[in-house]
Amino acid sequence: MQGRLRLVFIGFGAINSRVADLLKARNAPVDIVAVATRDDPTERARIPAGVPFLASSSDLAALKPDLVIEAAGRAAIDTWAPAALAAAPTMIIASTSAFCDDALLPRLADIAEKHSSHVLIPSGAIGGIDALAGAAVLGLDAVTHRIVKPPVAWKGTPAEKLLALASLHERTVFFEGTAREAASQYPQNANATVVTSLAGIGLDRTRVELIADPAVRLNGHTIAAEGAFGRMTITLENNPLATNPKSSELTALSLVRLIEQQIRPVTI
Image (cartoon, rainbow, N blue to C red):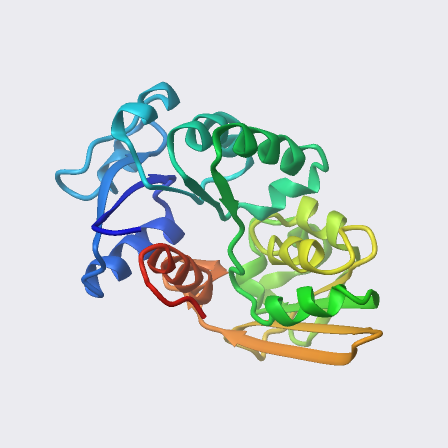
């Protein structure tokens, strides 16, 4: 793709606002032509000066976007994705916990095929997805995704009913189950497990552990897999987003990379 990319952001909270700031700082050849958020004064105030507020998905086609970037939650996908895939060649969906609904991704794939568009699923807060997906070609026997975050990152989640987060003194595993269960119950903290599952052996075979640890400051992910290819262990320790400890800085960085890849002549 040549020239400047016309971007539409769906949601402009901690992740997409950080993405916009990074693109600006990097002088990326992009123009934000609209932002869709909740229609209230606080949310609209986040939108950069001069960028129009997008009130309805029916207005997307007139904007002729090259890329629509969603980071606003499952409800936003239902509202915006069909129109985005009809209006733009590509849509990035960051709220991957939505894919716990098995019917959603095939439905979006059908819409994308109808309009010759594409859905891109970012790696988000994790890495090594290329290796995991490559290993899955020969079949995987087991995949485990362990997430360790400081107690503050688990505030506002079901973990508050299981742990005294404010006074936690030791590392505590408070959830063990499938990726489907983890992402459904902890959509902001554990949506990365859906990416692991899509690349590997699925939502119901991928095992997940969620851990609160008062001794850590970073958001940690360890992905362990074994199969016909051999064995791998991938470990990441991410700085949390300054404006949202539930999310990692790497989540925004992965979106920046994915956006810039759309106009680079070489892709790694």
